[in-house]
Length: 377
Image 1: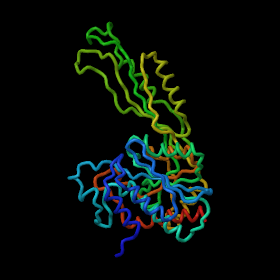
Image 2: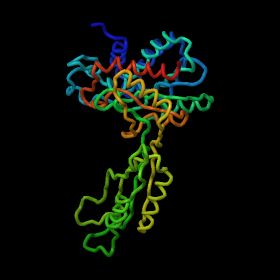
Image 3: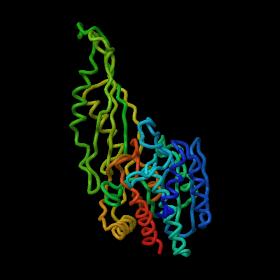
Image 4: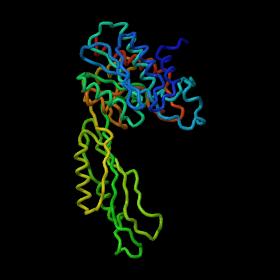
């Protein structure tokens, strides 16, 4: 059987051990294919991270394909059924770290563009690529750096497809039209350490914290909206005590996180937490960390174009979803009004023996090509 061009390119990318923040030449491979198509390619290095901005055309609308060449660590290699960075076929699947998240999507982006440009050399608008090697890591030197550069240059974007693995049971059943924001807090509630037999001479911060924490757990932060479930507040760690059973601790530390929708703002959530803590008269210190704002692309031109392409290629009716963790879409949404994530099934991502079913690879490419046709012809 003849190996498809998309499969061949996927295998080349899978063979490069590009663990965050390494790119290991993946982007050079993309540049070698994009430049002959007329893309102007820029490599932007920030810290240890390699980023690529490539654009074909100068007119609007601008359709951007966004993704990452970095992958998460393999975990124990001896637990893999085959070498993680040696693409392997087995039982109708392609195995390798990055097969689902997200080197197949990147290969499909490129081949879709090759086919589209060959058929529509004078297409309207522009096609662009925004690729980073810092999505799986801190995400401080990657997509956000390129977005800031584009904003400073006054370049405007219209549509962006992020190749994250969004599908669930089969290719095309789920696309992401938004993601929740992530706001974390480290709360230190202060007491007075003392002997447990003389509680009148101490102040137990665990006892003081309990009613406030119970109220935070019970609080309804919002009711969500058409696209989002209600905002969630969750405690992840509680640390208090000296290890001895006869000492009242001097403080208790609570780590918590909001996954919040566009029905709330991070400023509003912070203010409400402080109000509850203050109401209980606690002596406390609270350090906040905002790792991502929520973004939302309501049903419209881009989601319609992708859903139409999915239906034509697979006969699947795509569901719009905003579940899951954060992605680089949060940065792109600051400079692009319509951002949709779509890619292969995600059941094996970040796991031992990560894989993609071979039968999905060319249809994925075809969906990206059909979306180009829907938007730029």
